[in-house]
Image 1: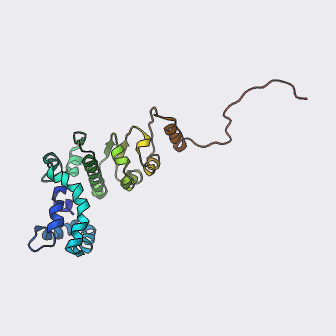
Image 2 (image 1 turned 30 degrees about the vertical axis):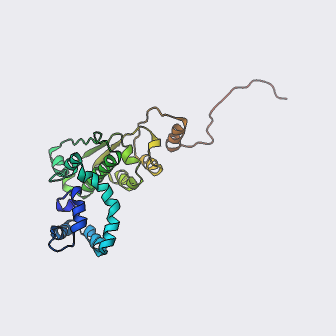
Image 3 (image 1 turned 180 degrees about the horizontal axis):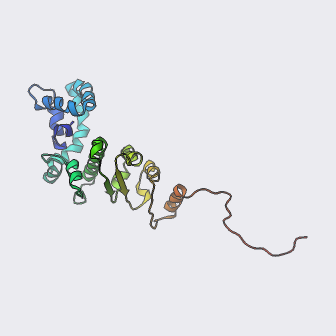
Amino acid sequence: ILSATGCQVTEALDLLTNVGTSGSIWNQRLVEAGRVVPDSVQVFRQTYLQWPANTRRERRYAFEAHILPFVLSASLKAIVGASSPIDFGALEAEGATLIVDTSPIEETLVRDLLTVHLFQSFLNWIRHRPSAQKRPWYLLLEEAAILMRTAALVDDVASLANEFRNDRLCPIISFQSLMQLHQDMRELLYSFGTHVIGAVASPEEAELAADFLMRYQPWMVKHEQAVYGRFD
């Protein structure tokens, strides 16, 4: 809803606090969002807007805890609260390279949330861009353990494996160790077509990789030794 109205995550608290009140600008913005993301707006109207004020306040407490760092930190607010979001369409038209580096953000939770938000925003744009405008994209996720260890993103990463040809997207995912990943994510990544594997850190990790990549051949002769002698 925020993205559909040209707003940023820093305005989420204002939306949840004031939407539905008399004279609120969010009432008109919700109508505008309904033309872009009608399903999302319908769910929002049928759930959040139907709750009593006390229920709304209780339900948004946990969400506010995640959003407040982006609102209170000047640097984070500058990153996620720009007047307009990243225009992936313009970057595509220019053939430009977009580099996102979240390493300067010291708070682990905030860095993870920001990374996940950017990743999901990009995938959402990829899925909904017009077919006539589809140019090839190379998506490089370096040190991707932050994303890959998140169980909630299994479906999003699965879409890369299942739909990347239709979306003309070439995902390249790198990480240090299989042990950094959620179990479901390990199985999913091994469904990708090409793997480049370096040295592994432990026998357990080597066995895990072998289980996924090596075909099981129970009748294969693994060792031969010639024995000479007589048998009466």
